[in-house]
Length: 419
Ligand SMILES: Nc1ncnc2c1ncn2[C@@H]1O[C@H](COP(=O)(O)OP(=O)(O)OP(=O)(O)O)[C@@H](O)[C@H]1O
Ligand SMILES: [Mg+2]
Image 1 (cartoon, protein in one colour):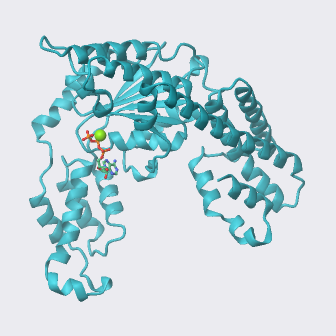
Image 2 (cartoon, helix red, strand yellow):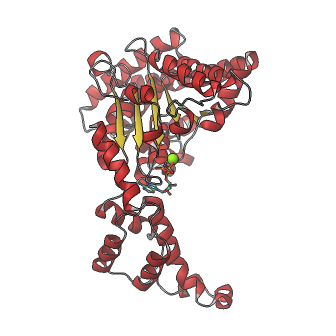
Image 3 (cartoon, protein in one colour):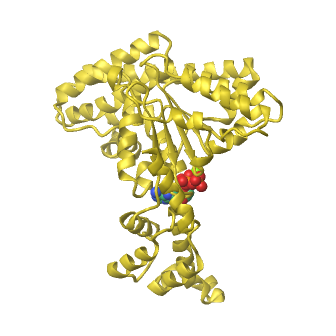
């Protein structure tokens, strides 16, 4: 990544054409925060302040914080330098600062790797969390998630921006401690959490029952404790607990000792998670069975002014989102369906989850291939007949929504009871 930045600015002959629109750089800029059209001088000042802050974090050995701030500062500085270079203005000072930020961020990466290796070699629980839950790379982007616009905006405000600019979101602006995504299966809860991880480029821990439910008594709770400890060490960090109901379900009389202790450890760790408003650990939990979650856990996800946490219903797609989904899934498929017919198809898909819709589209798109299987082998791709609305009618009859109306209403009632 850094080499391509350096090359893009240096603009040596071989790289010249590439550097005007190098894919990597475009990707870096796209993935970073949207930089508004503000005065370049102000932008440079902001970037310098961020580099100063990053260097402070670095000197305090807060390497992950330093890395996030420095990477972000380079994303602010890079377009300004490129602009100056194009206008043949002097940009030596800014270039020096950029290189300082890049090099320090690189050292931070090495330090973080080293710390991880040391921790993993010292303690088996650290090792297990670092090896099984810590994720460096997630490929899901917000653009791939269709619909859910207001939720994506909300996530920008409560997670993405505070992690990119930890210096600004402090005090009364400090982000909440956590979010609970709940709702019918297959509508993007897991996708959203992964897109957040991709966007903030911070340390992401992906945990599910298989990571924490252990054979031996006491191991699960130790792993839970270690998870929060490691997240604290590598903050800014996001802990994502998928299917939280299976780990933290309501207590019952025949409850196993291990799961009771796991829950208690979760509550203690979660309560102690942000001791100061400088701490940047954020919890995302997801469930399609919110009614099964322990009441004490659910109560933690209540919005209040001091320690806000929030519950968000990830609902089934509405007509517009259904249209968006079908269009995006069909974008590379030859079809003969006009807009009014597509509207009608999507109306019939009311009550289907996003993943049900994916199954319907797949079924419809397979239809042309099923007519003469022998011919397919010799046929060129252009000769496959377009998908027609009749294929969708067939697919809708075949693929039924995974939830019935009664099951869906349970989510809506839960949502109402939580308002
Ligand atoms: N909003 C969406 N936009 C695009 N694709 C989606 C969306 N929601 C779901 N999908 C598709 O459905 C699949 C399942 O989504 P995801 O795993 O996020 O669902 P979930 O809400 O976490 O379900 P569960 O409650 O069963 O865990 C995704 O891999 C994706 O292909
Ligand atoms: Mg999921």
